[in-house]
Amino acid sequence: MGKHNLEVQGYCDPAFKAVKETFQENFDSRSEIGAGVCVYKENEKVVDLWGGHRDEERIQTWTEDTITLMNSVAKSICALAVHVLADRGLVNLDAPVATYWPEFGQSGKDNILVRHVQGHQCGAVFSDTAKPGDWFDYSAQCSAIARQEPAWPPETKGGYNTINIGFILGEIVRHVTGKTIGTFIREEISEPLGAEYNIGLTTKELDLVAPMHLNPENNFWAECAREGSNLNRAHSGRPDYPNLLNCIEIRKGELPPFGGHGNARGVARIYAMLANDGELDGIRLLKPDTVKHLSKLQWKGICEMTHWPLRMGLGFEQNSPPYIPMGSNLSAFGKLGSGGALGFCDRERKLAS
Image (cartoon, rainbow, N blue to C red; front, side):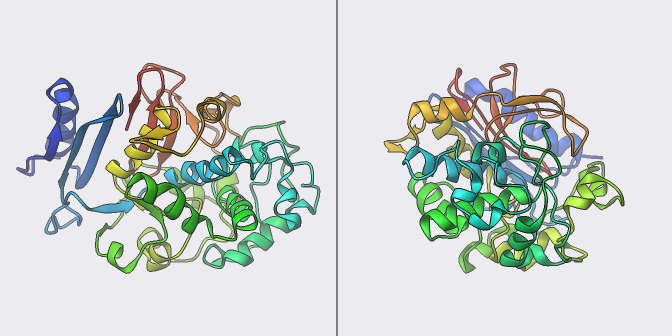
């Protein structure tokens, strides 16, 4: 590890200089390639920093507009899409998923409610009949999910729904609105808020993407590849691509569970809306009671899928130090994405990042 003689760019309120110093240290001492960090406090953007490079060769500069794959942060944005529909009275979280996606009700899943999916308690975590590559065939993956029996009765266990949750929420959105979940997120969340985060990129946005370079010390994807693991079984539809996370199918297509691209500024803006009880800069997406409800703890304990300690809300991970740290307030909530992405908010402190 060593210093690469670069200085981070952007704005930092003097009161948050410790954030800038720590971010700079990431490059100086931890061999960070490229990254960004953004913080909102009391609805004001107080930190917006970026630095480094887009490539491992450190030739292409990471700029203000650079975006990258943020992996499972997408799960929380998909969950938010369904909460927006619930806020509008178009989805009932206490209704069976099959109310909106009838095919899902087969094979013993007719009693799985929308909130069971949001809270990662539904048991619909596997899709054994999915073939390698079905992640990129939306209808095929959804059919495999619909055919599958649940791994456990709803609410009896908590298990991180690594893949299926994105497709299930996607089908709820599609059946209710007629739009794909990526289109709904773009039109109803990202564009109104001016947030640089989307599932499914335009041609112009493709030019802004920095490739994903996984930390070799991150063992999540290794566990997904380990024969016999629950995560491996959940990945039956995974395409056999050597550089999966940087393929054009993920960038241009819609892979709801982890295919969202954005930057720190975009995700912080979405979470700033949540920190402010559903409104930011005059744009209201949710009522305060909706935000209060989605942030409530649903379960805590050892996750059935990852075997890690986890605290889960309705579509959002709750502060789970030291594994998913979000400050000192255990009521903070957000979503971690493999590769270093994290979006979260603390409603009590009106803080978001």
